[in-house]
Length: 408
Length: 134
Image (cartoon, rainbow over all chains, first blue to last red; front, side, top):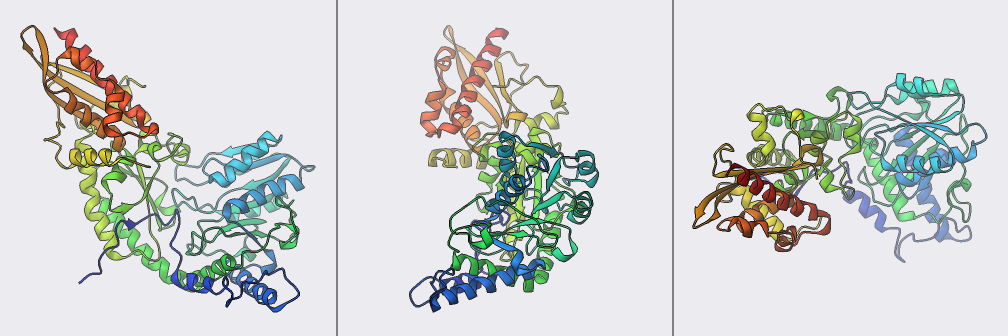
């Protein structure tokens, strides 16, 4: 007898992951009176020393997963803060060298919004388009550099598409040109190998909660060799070698450390399982007409699958799939009423952007979860198409690009 | 996405029993049929509403309605709600239906009011189409 399904089935791991129970258990030991609740910055007693020891151990676990020196890890409140610190930190420190930054149109808002802010402060930003597979090419970067370019910020894995950028070759190019290179790797830890000794990356952002750790904690890798300097964005005590002030959140840090330690030991088995789910999923949807996979299948990770179901609006599909927790690039699920800017940058027509669903799997996804999702998905699409005037027009052979729509 | 229970109910019922909830189409060329189609795929919603009318005394009365909607859950619920309001009404009465009537009936959140506006536009257009044929 199969285990009862936990409904709705969680297929939104790219948004956040549940905390691994082993992580939660470890965190509990750093909060209450009978635990190591001390301030890691307290140098005068055992409570502080114990907390500091735990923080440093966690720092080693994080460093170990990405193969860098623990002294290159700076704790932040999450990947958003790490992105802000990296981008504004470099821009402010090296402003005298130049005021041009290169990034891409498919970055997370945590990169795009700091860039917008820098534009208001007089910096110039180039936003690169991805290629048709959803990747940023080295050639587009080469074409965009200028003598005053100080920073390139390109994400490792795209959060909507799962596409992977070639940070190795972008890094060598940037290093050769003397331009700093920041990588948002919030989606990468535990999903792909990262070896910072073999990557010419100066700054890399990490998040705990995408890798079975708690929300509210992240880290920025700041390279020591060659050394990159950043101007602190938060002041107040000079913690983290002056780069990020604020009392360290011991329990959060311990949680991130434990989550990354587990990620290192279990990555292989996690990935093997998820690869199986990915092929099964693809196989299960291949008979649905008029679907489009967003992002090149050969250039992406297996835990994210972004599919447009043409002539069906994404939010209505989410409502029809009420037993499945997924997210959509549809405008209706966002506060802005704009469809996904990532899918638009990819060159998808707006209607396909409205029709997209992102499925993302993880450590706790089961075979039954996949089977159940597949069993209701094609039926939901079929019923919504029955309701769709666009599907009717498609079946009638009407060219919708030639229709004069009554926009409102 | 805070949806009222009414939107969810209406959406699910329409999805589960399309025929009972007037999903379908009439031949748009029939003289007793008026068709309205509003919205655009690029905006994320398109509503197609068709009314079938018969003459009762000296007035046209809506005897049947068919619709199809591409859009979010509240767009689909709004059209389905509108359809229920229309059957049996004279064209003059149907013209009086305002988007607020639909929004109130479904308790639409402010961000979804445009769905009810679209529904109001669709009935206006369908009536116009019908009247032009007479």
